Length: 389
Length: 136
Image (cartoon, rainbow over all chains, first blue to last red):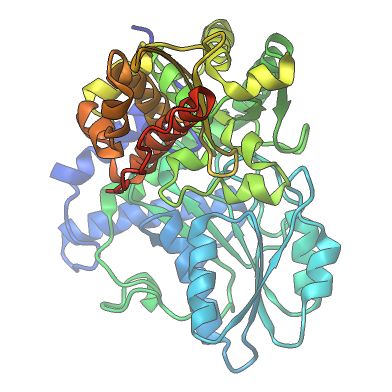
């Protein structure tokens, strides 16, 4: 059976060229980068080379890049690390209602520790209004964290404007760029960010490796205590294969991102137009244009997301849904709720996230299969019957 | 979370989808907020359930439990149908993931409501003492 992977926002395949670059790190360059001998120094050289590649890619200095275990660690590191390092200045953090759980949960944790957190709402497209951020800043605010682009609905936030506000008020500004590094151009100076999180496995790199960009001079407590790796900022023996893989993934993104964005936008828009045109009672979630090139998120009325997802899976198509039925809390996606979707429309949401390997045939296949699935489920749906008759 | 073979089989090929014209009992339960909505229709002749059909808005487990409950009640007496618990529905499906057990409760509730509705329509005071539902 044909298998089509349209869940690249969850994770991407590891590019075979990345795997090739990693392989010597298991059997040849296997020394500990902290060791003084040649084995160690070869490994150290490999990770420092990656640090330079990554730094150059986002307009940073190599010493401003810290290697971590991934996006969740980078986000936890930032929220807790800044909050505790700047306790003398204040105890207030500003973030949005549509952040990833790896931001929201550390914030909830800090609330229990006596910190104050403001969760800024978004408009119906998922956009944060920089004016709302400005209003929320107090003399106790130590950190603002707003994601670069949302992982569910793909909305790209006005990061540069928010960064400008943060800078003028002397507040650190962090952005979660897990969905954007390697997918959209990023320059930390142009975006006015002080701290930035990214993860390897969202840009065709390996799982278990991420980065944190920390602007020179930004105060942050270490997250992992132990040896003095990463200038004492993050203890733990370096994940050399992972780091080298990350570097290769960034190199490939640098070469291919421009073309890829063009291709993905055209496929994305074809899928959106196709779904909205072929299936009645459907709507697009997220912003029509300020949108990740690979993100399609639609609500399909009168049917539930998990049952669509399972049917698509039976046809070889992998996607995801914000339906409560797939979450352990039985609550619909907090992002879809934040943009004002009714429970029913949130339940009926599907996210297709395209990738490097997605072809036009794949999109045609989805468009040939999905209407039938929706039709079958609607014929079973008591809601459809009532509304349409 | 993983569904059993039996759940997937009923999800793929749900039995008894639809409505019954002039039903003897209808049970409607759930709401869009909790995620699942189920409608169960029964036809009863001489105290025996001769037909059952359903319409469901919901996840894989909701559709599979709807399908299974219609299978379980067919050709059963009203009294026996009343004894069908959510556990019996889940067991007949080879088990449900713990977070999906509420779907089986919905199926039991739909059945109880349909039987209650039948009792009202036929005005026969059948012994409708709600069998206590038990959740996972």
